[in-house]
Length: 113
Image 1 (cartoon, rainbow, N blue to C red):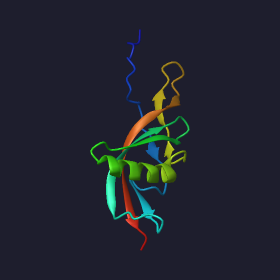
Image 2: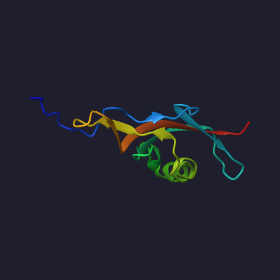
Image 3: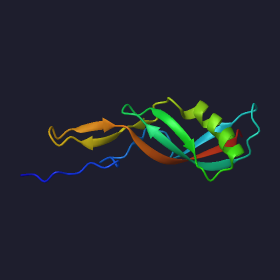
């Protein structure tokens, strides 16, 4: 008899960044905004297809910063397929099954050179 493995909120395999995307996402600042170079953490929810579903700015930022950065990262990252989804090993079939998961990344906004 195989012992039952209790499922946790942590996937067997974490989501993986697709090719040509840095671990720190660098988003160029544009003339429409007044961003100074800044780096901060963003908590992501990634769906079963690898799309960024939700984003939350690190709560250690001030409320004003969070609102400003939240709008910017939503425009640049939300609903985009930037990851291979997290997976769990199906105990019955032995195959990897995609699942929704969370991930913490660093985002850097910098002026265009």
